[in-house]
Each structure stands twice: as C-alpha cells, then as structure tokens.
Length: 107
Image (cartoon, rainbow, N blue to C red):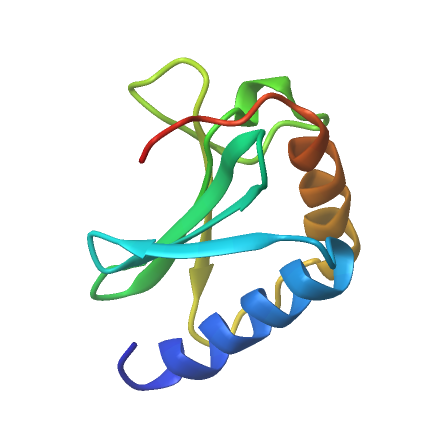
C-alpha cells in the first residue's frame, strides 16, 4: 500500500483485529480479506488513487448502512480518504454486525 494508505491500512487492520480477535485473513487480488473460520468472508479493502475502498460484503444487512451503495445489492462501501478520520466506534459496530452474518465463500 503506497504512501498514506499504508498507515491507514495498518490502522484498519488493527481495528479489525481488536474488534474481532479470532478474525481470519487472506490476500487475494492484491486486497486483504477478513472472515471467520467456517463462516466465510465479510470484509475486504482495496487501494485506489485517492482513497481506500472498504467493502462490507453483506453491508445491506448492517445498521446504519455503510454510506456508499454498490451495483451488487448486498454490498456496501466505506471510502477512506487521506486526512479523514474513520469513525472507529461506528466501524467497530459494523464489524461486529458483519462478523455475525453468513459470510461469502469466495475462495
């Protein structure tokens, strides 16, 4: 992850680990994925030129909804921009909710 995204990615990973200590990780398509053993994958993120796209694979089941819709009706996104703080309390709430949902068996 280049530039500021490296620190932001580390911080996201730390928040995920702190919120869900038993989280399982994998890297596919140059993106980290997070899931629970035997339940599938619930979150991923990917770097773009100006932001990091955090993908909640079953984001339509979260409350409140993550802010950005997807072409896929179940997926919702959170974009992380340089210099903008992530609402860690809300992010942790989404993580706890997402972890309890059936995940995606992507690979």
